[in-house]
Amino acid sequence: MAHYARKGLEAVADENSPQGVLLSGEANVAVRIKLEREARGWSTNALSDRLNEAGFDMNPSGVWRIENGKRRINLDEAIGFAEVFGLDLRNLVGPPQLAAKARAMELIDAVVDAFRQTQRANTTYTQARDALDTYLTEHPDIRTEADVMVSNAIAKAAAAHDDAPSDDEK
Image (cartoon, rainbow, N blue to C red; front, side, top):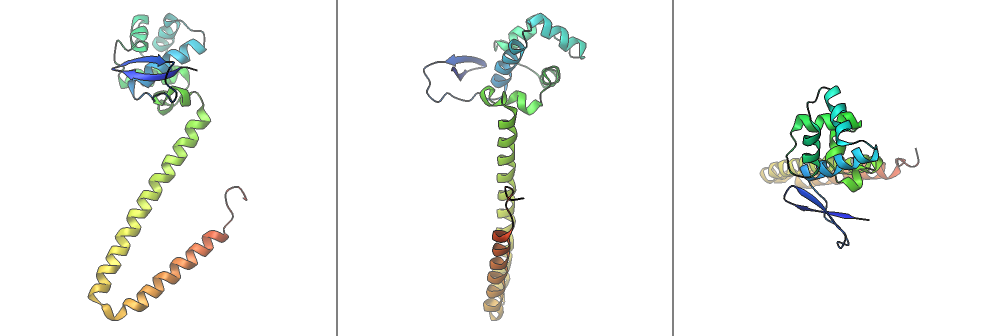
């Protein structure tokens, strides 16, 4: 299986790369457009016709130039290609090896979204803990009781989380 590397805007197959280098941005789109077009058995003329019918002005030479990294793609054109191929724009710009597997992209998006939520929650927790610590520094007479309340509440929340059915058990 060919792995892809990036050289400027030109995407090239690198047969010797054991891991491959994931393309980014426009290089992903260029490779993906060509893969999607060829998978459908469309010529650059046929793809150009479909883009034009959908309201996205593109000649066959433009399609070829984008696919071969000779011309940058603008956002409106990327939206047009995604529409003609029936893909989400995010899927079109993703790594071609993964993007062709829509479920993989959905799961990757879910993991990244969950990570971002965790980061936001960690930031919120740190800010709340810092505010409490600042307050307790100013009021040391209640530190012990406050620390016990926080520890008990966290332990109770953790126990409730541990007892909750997982997504697999629902």
